[in-house]
Structures are given as C-alpha cells and as structure tokens.
Length: 619
Image 1 (tube, rainbow, N blue to C red):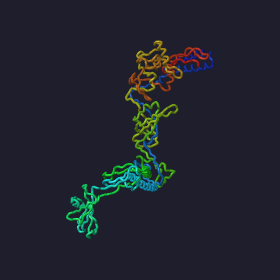
Image 2 (spheres, one colour):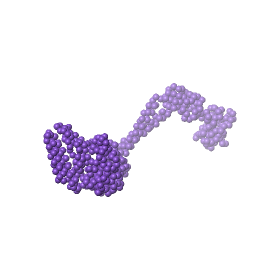
Image 3 (spheres, rainbow, N blue to C red):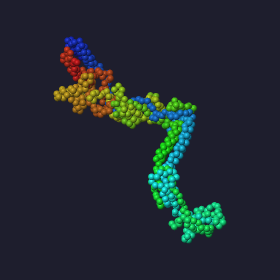
Image 4 (cartoon, rainbow, N blue to C red):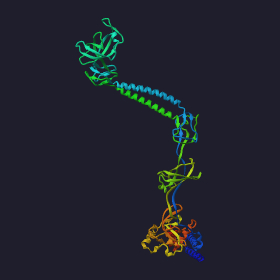
C-alpha cells in the first residue's frame, strides 16, 4: 500500500511539471481535477488493500412479498352533509331535536308561525272560486252559440237564414210534436176520484168511431161547473197519433168502467218556438222546415267576435288563481322544516322562540351529516394516476386513533389536475366504510396497493446496478467460471464506433461508451461488460439478472440468481467512493488539455459506477 501511495505522489509531481507552462486560470482547473483524481485513487487503493473489508455490505437473496404502494393524506368528511336553512320569516314556534340526535329524512325539525300566509291563502281561494264561476259562465255562453232544440218534434217553419244577425230571444224555428196528441175530457167529480195518472183509457173518435188506446197524463185537482151545471174535473189523455188525428178532432173516452161526461178535442202535445240564447251571426243551419229533431239537436250555429276573447281572458284568470293557490300551498310547506337526509345533528344554532326576519331568513339553523360513511380526497402524482382505478381497496389510518386500520375503496378519479411548481397532481375520492370513531376533520393517511407479487425471489433495490448487473459473492469459484465478459476491443470497428454514441450523457459527460447493444440489453445471454467485472468488489463477480416488480426496498429477481446467494449492497456513504474507484479502474489521465492555450486532451474516464468518455476541452 505504501508503494502504491508513493506511486501516486510521483504521478502528482509529473503532472505538476506538465502544467507549469499553462495560464493561471487553466492551472487552477487542471490542479482541481488532478486533486480529485488523486483523492479518488487513494480511496480506491485503501479499500482494495483490505481497509474496506469492513465497509462491504451484503444481503442474501430470499423469498418474500413485493407491493407497489401509492400513499397520501387527506381530511375526512361525511359522505353527505346538509345545512338546514329557512326560506321564510316568522317566529319559530317549536323545535324537536338537540345536537347529537339521530334524525330520519322527513322528520319535523322546526315549526314556524305561518298565520299571515294562511290569511293570504284564504283570500286566494276566494278569488279562485270567483274565477271558476266566471269561467263556467263564459263556457255556458259559448255553448249557447249552438242553438239547440229543447224538445223533440217536427220543424214547421224556419224564421232565420244564414247571415242574419240575431240577438238573445230571437225566434229561429217553430217546432211541433205531432207524434203525440192530447185529449182533454170532463169527468164527473165523483167518478174522477177513482181515476189516476198512468191509467189506460179507451178513446173513440166521434167522427169515425175509430178506437185508440191512450194513457191518463193528468187529473185536475179541482172541479169546474159544466154547461149542464154539473161539477166536473178535467182529465188529460195522451194518445199516439196514427197519423190521421189533427188538432180540433173530437173524441170520447172510457177509463175502466167510468165514462166521460162529454166529448173533448185533440191538441198537439207540444207546439213551441226554438229561440237563440246568445247574440251573433247565423253561420249555418243544421235543419229546415219539415225535419224531425230530437231534444238537444243543434238547429243553427252562431258566431260572436267577442266570445272567444272573453273565453281566453276567463281561462287565463282561472289559471292565474290556480297557480296562486299552488304557490301559497308550496310556501306553506316551507314553514314546516323537515330533515333533508337521515343522519346526526352536528350543530343547532336556532331554537323555539327565535324570530327569523328579512336579515336572517337564510341563516344556517342546523347541520345534519350522514356519518354512516365518510369520504376524503387525496392528491396523486401524474406519474401514478394511471395506476389508480375506481374500486381499488384502500388501507386508511388516523393519527388520532393509534393501532386502528380502516378499509375503504377508490370511489372517483378526477381527470382534471392541478399543476404547481411543474408537477401535476390529480384528486381522487376515497370512501371509508364502517368509520367507527372517525369524526369529520380528522387527518388520515391512505395506502393503495396498485400491484403486488407473493413469495418471489428478491434483493434490495440498491443491489441492482445499471444494466441489471448484480455483484454476487464468488464463494471460491474461479474466474473462468464467472459469466463471460465482452471486451470492446475485440468487436468490429463499426460496432465500437457506434457504441461510443450509445452511452447516456449526464452533465456533459458521456457514460459507458459501450459496444453496440451492450448497455441496451442486447448482449448475448450471460455476457457482462468487462468494465463491470473489473469494478466488482474483491470476492464478488458481476451477474446479469432479469428483474420484475420493485417497491422502495426490494426488487423481484426473475432469473440470474438463486435463493441464498449473497449479493453486494453498496452503502450510501460509500457509493461515491465506489463510483470514483470504478472510474480510476478504467484508466487515468493521458495527454494534455486543449482549449485556450491548452493542447492535447483528456481520455479514459468512467465506466460502470464510474465515468466514461472524454472531457471536451475549451469553451
């Protein structure tokens, strides 16, 4: 070791002679680089001479579980929370609950004085009745524009024609009921006592002695004195006209065994006029002279220019009154404040006796929350958001409740992110079921397992170097038994040249100018770059492995290692030393530096954990 240190000093002296002719600025740059290289070389020699044995850390390849976990924090809140407010003003007559009470949806919470609104509602109901009466009358007037016959019969004469302007009471047609004839006969007062309405009568025409059957329709309730001086009562008999009877024809009748006191004459059952009950212009006639009509049949149709506008105004007035009633009834419901959801009363700020006026009608009177389920939001980094899916299970803990673990699930993943300091995060909502003892406002931590492997081979993450290289303890195996290495100098010139451009660059330095495919996983199976073998700690050899899932501590080994293998794990404190040692193991400085007043260049560099490539000279 002393010999090696002496060699370092000699090299330093030689380097000092070379830089005497440089400018002051270039001397400082070269001197600084030389000092760094000397320190790195010294540390490498110390470690390789046995002083570093105690610093070598190892780990055994074992089996276990690996899980990728995304974690975050949030503040819990009820899944549903409602602020109870009043939409009306007035005195609170009663309240039915206290803070902490459980209430069901629809339960009465407050009763507010509604006497003023009830008076207004009563007036509106009266207005509705008036509007309804007016509307009904308007519709009746419209119906009267259709002139109808009140009775059935035959029209004997039409008194109006199309285009006539008629008024209320104007005669439109004459109507006669010719199918039924009425015969009035005198009966002795003593005999009339046995005659009743509906009794059958035998009628005989005096001119032809033709017999007809009739029905008693009326018996007078008082007596008259006949021309012969006898007291008689009048009996009306209805007879169906066979077609030959006309008004003025004479006949007698026998009712049971009682005969009339003298003959009587026939008259039409009905002889009337059909008149208009509204004013307007005759626009059509539905029948004419000689036509038979039934009761309710339309004879003429009138048109009135004012009737339609009257109907429309009446309809609008009625609907306006109906809407007023509906509105007041709906407002009346606001005076009874009910629970909008089922839950726990978290806060009560209004009580019976308080008065709600125009200034505080919208004040929060109480707060009700559904505590059966709680939710919270947490932010997820843009690199991880694609791994979060709705329905994924979540493990939740709270600092306020030690040793308690709650279960939940992802309920919602937002696609709208928030960017801050160049980092974008996306909110997700997590639902916690059975949140016993959790209360709103508590801070909780959540862990979401997005991927996991059970019972797999694993090693510490830091044991795997770039290119999936792991240093495995040799356990006495000879060098020729180790995995084959690739010497870049044995490759064709074009592959060596291309390999010089395939290395990753960091901070302006090109790392590991490897042969084509060497650092891109294109080496033949088992082949290890020569630099990686040279950088292996004493007693270890480089092995290429195939890796799988990893978390913050362990990485899955799919192939390349066996359970029980001992692998080298660089210590955090020694990582820089090992890197610099690897750099020195690949070569030193040769030539000079080019730039302003500098000639030559710097070759060699790092490989593996060290530097590779040359350092460009000048600026």
